[in-house]
Length: 469
Image (cartoon, rainbow, N blue to C red; front, side, top):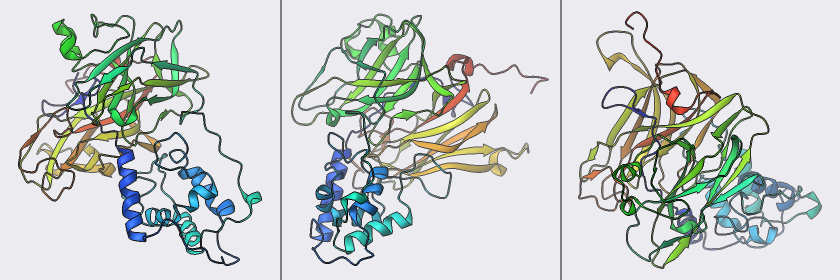
């Protein structure tokens, strides 16, 4: 289902298969190497700290707990934990460099536009505190000044899940070559409808995962009707032609998307995603090879709403899959737009491009009201992202935005296909839409809240036009 004119659309379908590189480990390692080269030391020299200097336990540890330890703790994606004084002091110089340069915590929204509830950025005062601590020799201070340790659910960023659903069969991955999109259908065995407040995807071999999307297949769905249950499959292993098409596109509800840098879903009180009783979860996995054979067996953790919500959350998308980026073009622009079919509350954004992506915008187009065309339309920018393929973040509005039926949304992407782009696979070729990272994509995912009794298919039914309007 599409909205808007032929060349501009909002999709009711789920995301097109797209490659999302699970490479935050690589980025962390590169950043640390750069910082070490610049600083030429792993920790500051020991010296007597001024009496007024910040200390680890009193001033630094609270900042780390709030902004850093979700990733920088044992078993998480960061290459080193920052929980104890000994662990942190070792990397003090690098910490100062990365926070003063605003490399960490990662955040790519331009401050020109919008305010976001999940912005992890440090304040100027927090940056000053960390820098002053390093300059003073990284003093420990008094352990009695430490805040209580922050408690994390083992193996999860969300609180302890109410249910964990795991792919029954591991997926075997080769050492080299491209890997076709892999699916696994997992029955939930839910005997009652479930409203999901929080969710998180956990691959078992994170380094091999480009992306993961978990879809909801209700019991009456004909999507992938003849596909096997509980074992991995790809489009090429399916024999039914409709199933083969279904492995490329779907209008099924998206429960959650996993990508480099993406955080778990955590919906406000009164909002949740819906899993009907008897549904299956369909894991769509895009894997990469890492020069050695591996296996992956992904799971999703679910925290259920304590009571039925007032609003249901739907994930929609703006997609442009017809662009052609010329060779050596450093600033190619592509866009897509469409109109909202019914009133809704805009909650968040998730932009997606590949290695040539450099900037992404979400806009509202306000028509001029004149019959002369769009030259006099005004543009309201909701989000502008300086795009980083290795940190594909979601951006959650601090204040949800009401969108009236008929509102025109626009997604715009800029691509750098020049040799000056260090991530460019090949600047000499024209680039089109494609699954692999050496291809490109322009997808603007966004989440909306609608009345709890409205599903995606009904949301896309436009009200009858009145008096020819």
